[in-house]
Length: 262
View 1: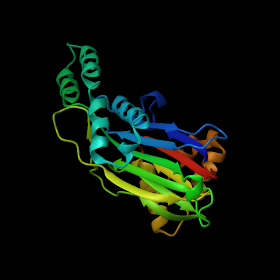
View 2 (view 1 turned 120 degrees about the vertical axis):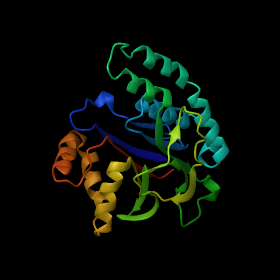
View 3 (view 1 turned 90 degrees about the horizontal axis):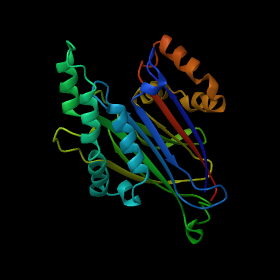
């Protein structure tokens, strides 16, 4: 299968891009070869120390995990548990960097001791075997999705949403790296893709922007496609949407994947 990938990110206003708490990872099949693709977005929780690090760590490990992590809750939990084993070392480094004379040192220590949390959404695109495509799905395949929290996925075909993993909530479930709390079980979904389908994965602020447009009968995919066609203008587009009050001032991640034939 072939996958046309576009990744766009923008930090909160007045924040350097290096301090974003969002993360994205992809694995794509080599050009001209059949194979699976993996698309991951994660959104570290604001206010939790090390959340950007944790979002990147979990996204990286899920991207490299065995395929069963996308279709089996215990297997996903194993990935999250193994990724969290790296947190104590990161925690010690963060604690060592807190000035002991700081008036707010106790706040920083408290945040670091509680540990970071993140939402995460992973999609695995698989080609059908050559004998299993069927006349109605030439070159198509299946997808598997695993998610915790409010990052969203929309599968669009001919300008219409055919499937989604979409959560509307202001208090999302999260995967934690520390604190001793049991992580919630992930949502698991499966579906089919056709050549020409486009998958849009995005973190919560952009997802709410999409919801507002689709609820009003709009087609926000056209605007996102335009940004992927000219990615240099994405920061200005984000600024414009924020100034109009239709896009929240939060880290923004869009991962777009167009599916071609196997």
